[in-house]
Length: 193
Image 1 (spheres, rainbow, N blue to C red):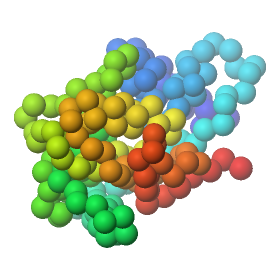
Image 2: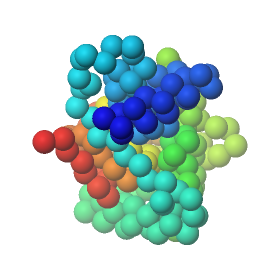
Image 3: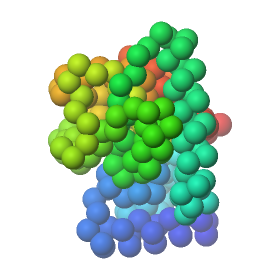
């Protein structure tokens, strides 16, 4: 119960700082429904099943992010060979996918694009990075839960004239191995049993 109270306090603090439920869910690596439950006054109902992911031990040192990104890059190379894919660009989903995507793009000598999801709309690509027209792209994020953010990135990539060929994450909280037909690979898969 103490863990739940700590999560409630963190969610409340983030809400007070101006973040909405979608942004809090992204920051805490939990589902939006779990955020809404944590912020509700009702403690009688149990929350939906969810797994909280924390990777701060990785995130505090760039060298650790690089090591994880290198493993993700290895998965991308494996998938590219198995599926006979030519990859041009790595897309990092803001905020937490960006450091992984940056190191992956550097290691594989690929272009880097940055996607900023929007809470109510699809989102936008930063104009300071690679364009996507006629390019095969790998989309990178830290954690995939509901798939909402990844779906937005796929939609936006297609809208920009790009071809999303693979999604790669550190952690997959879903049962599915694809997102809207785009293959999904992760270093770690979680399940609530």
